[in-house]
Length: 118
Image 1 (cartoon, rainbow, N blue to C red):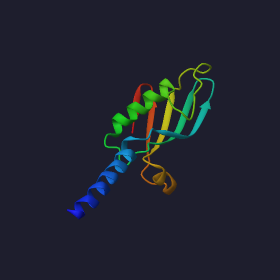
Image 2 (image 1 turned 120 degrees about the vertical axis):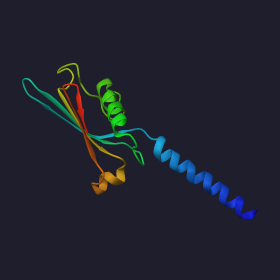
Image 3 (image 1 turned 180 degrees about the vertical axis):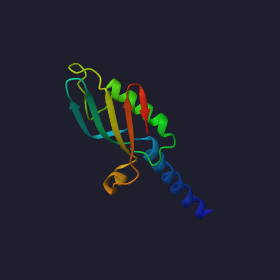
Image 4 (image 1 turned 30 degrees about the vertical axis):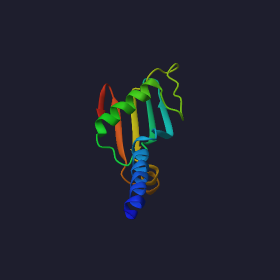
């Protein structure tokens, strides 16, 4: 009985920490780039997803592109009033900061002319 009293709170704490690491943090924009010419406007971003795992990359990419078009990030505001919406959006996604520092497990999203590539 004494072991149960010790193990149960530790199990709840561990579960709470895992849930926070997966669902409790928002996407974080690390860096942005913009390239413009007379007829073309490209926007690039590096993003940390702050997730342990990303089970459905397509849905995550669609949500990220939607947030980019809505200009819905805490760290950065894009200026769409002068040049309009970008012709191409390139996003490099890291699952968490540890993977970013180790340069591991990144994947790219490219959006151009209504088509998305992973």
